[in-house]
Image (cartoon, rainbow, N blue to C red; front, side, top):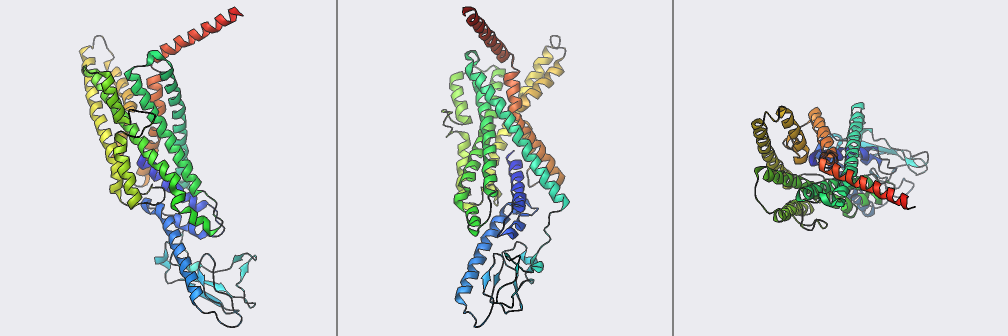
Length: 453
């Protein structure tokens, strides 16, 4: 999920920056339209930094160069290029600005402005400077294919936002049921509740991260200072914090899959163990014994090193980019490990279920159907579908295959919480029986109150 989510948000941010209006520096949005995943996310920030350097060089040059005598158009920086003093009635040309992402293609080109006879630069509608920058432009217009890609990516975001929202409502309802009904309080349901909670945190963290990124990259750009704010570390604190929390929640969610798998396997093999002691170990594996604090546990062992390296080595944007993929493997390896552990336990459990069903074929004539049902029920609980996508990394997929992978990955990941809540709470016979009993008691209490009146 994390790879698909990261890939999707990078490209949406790129297209958003292209479409966002910017009265002063609209040319900078051109740098956002790139097809490479790793280039797309960082090219905008790099271009802004280069533009800042170009502006400073321009002002430094203007201050150090003596002004000519007589009538002339004053030297200026018009937010696009650095202009020397112009001769009235003549065209002034300068080289294409070096901050343009495609400068290597247009480095021999020139941009021109006309100096009026009155000693003022020619303007359009009295507000915008006239200039001919055709030699400095790259063919970067949005094609129909690119517009379709943007719409597809936005559809993907809408898909997983709906998925996480639906899952969140179902999970919160399930948590309420499991905590309110005393007879449902046992180790098995405690583990289910923690898994539900990890799903809920995962959904909330993803939605909040998206909101903060949208707020950052969707800010209105009017003044030069707005660009400086946009690329500052202070502006990125919120989305970086959300990124760290999201990685923690995703890791915690995967390790609660492991807890579910280990617990069920122990039950099936009939292992004699202390549920209380093992539940404490489960809590440390998933996150922390003090669940409300959620500050220690297995996920922290990986999130803290990743966060430290990002801060020291790749302190860029919202930490969603990965120039050095070795840092990303700090997060990817524990997820891969959890998925492999779950797959091994899943296969062993299915083997045990199959052997028991075959041994009782007379009692279970439909044992193949029961096996299929058990398989489909365990897949979302153990997160087995993650194994299919975890080996198909972004580096190994491209084109249509990548879009297919992203779609299925986002769909299953976002709706998985809803599916688990339905299978292990709403459709659970024990839970339904307890709810029916509570409902009957509530109706009886209501009838008693009416009789007293």
